Amino acid sequence: MSTAVDIAGPSSPDQAHSSAKIPNEPLRPSLKRSSHPYSLSHYISTPSPAVDVKGLIQPSPAQQRAAQPAHTKPRRAPSWPDMWESPSGLHLAHAAELLMRAGLLALTPGDGEGGASGPEEEEEDSSGCGTDFQPFLGAWFPFSPALFPLAGFQMGGGHWRSAAMGAEGIEGLVAEGYSPGSLGAGNGGRRKRKRCGECVPCRRQTNCEQCSSCRNRKRGHQICKYRKCEELKRKPGGPGFESRVSGFDLRGSDFTLGLAQERSNGALDG
DNA sequence: GGTAACGTCCTG
DNA sequence: CAGGACGTTACC
Image (tube, rainbow, N blue to C red; front, side, top):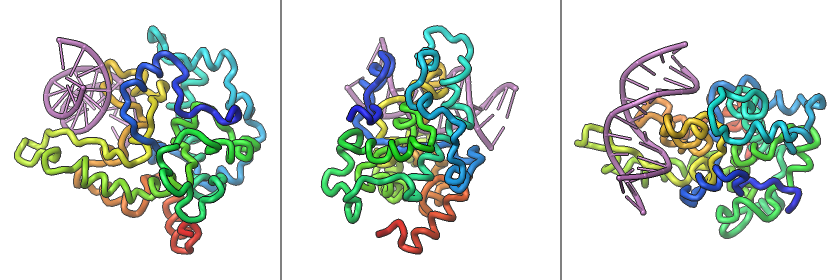
């Protein structure tokens, strides 16, 4: 366990505070959709030997310092925190997910059918979930501990997959976010939709405290970017709405296509 | 009443 | 178009 980064435990008072109020809901990388310049193949073909993996996995004191929630707001500290917002930061998470979904990240054994079998989604944060892939990954993939919560790594037996496929999101959408009441029919349409509670971001339990929404919570009034419900990101009834049916919100990546192919080949389905 | 967070408008 | 700011709603 010690090798696994704590993807759930708050690492700062602020985080603890914020997570205290966070509902027990799951997660998923609400990675920036269109701003990731690299496709899966890029990450695969780029072992990134030049990257100091250890440095990423175990941020230097300077990095950690920078990652601390800024008490004041001295603009943005360069370096570590920027990883999260900068294209590079997000695309690390993005890459991670791409790899996961492509099966390059080892899913926990026993993923065969039903994976974690049982309360798969309950044990999202612990028990060997992280250890299975991290060493493998760390060998060539730049990871940071904070990236795990952000990227929504839950290796619990294929859970990631269903979430990524977005199937749950649809149901959750209907069941929760778009209930007639919240749709605001007859209410001027200003009713708030609710989080679906099913998608990975919804399952995230902790705020990253690094993204702009977290850092700017007081003014921004926005939930952590990485906890933002996938369904709420979409305009109700908007064109993007249907994209979830085709799987995941990775329109900016060529992975969607590849995924579709993989699925049709049965590579992901069993 | 306080806080979280959705929706919308504004700005770069 | 993305991100930030703010109004507003929802929940405690």
